[in-house]
Image 1 (cartoon, rainbow, N blue to C red):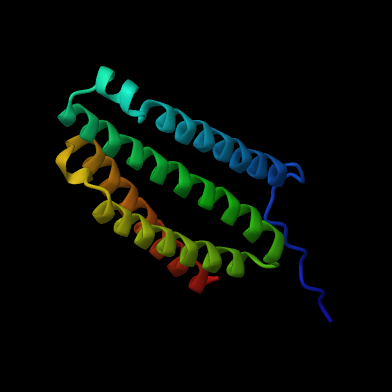
Image 2 (spheres, rainbow, N blue to C red; image 1 turned 90 degrees about the vertical axis):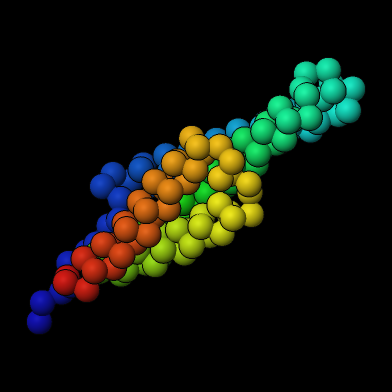
Length: 147
């Protein structure tokens, strides 16, 4: 009787800790961004630095950056958890594909919750990341079915 081949999600044992460290660094960076935003949003500072239209644009940019950082954190943590709980390449690919589709759908909703369509650069980045997440998820699921 053949023993199933041992599967490891990580090429090197320390890779999982790098991914977890990246997630933690993103959390710290997000916390700093939110803290800076709180400081700048105080009325005495905000009115000195921005006109009303500039402030609205700034708020939209910050919300987009918060959403992007949050998605990056979610992706790193998902990768870390997948690496711990999957025991086959097929399951790893299928789970990754499902999570990419879920993150893509959440990213789609974020685009409609934040008024990013007023700024062309954010809209382009939003569309590119949406296509990559959904396309990558579909491709990965399709690939896992062939294994």
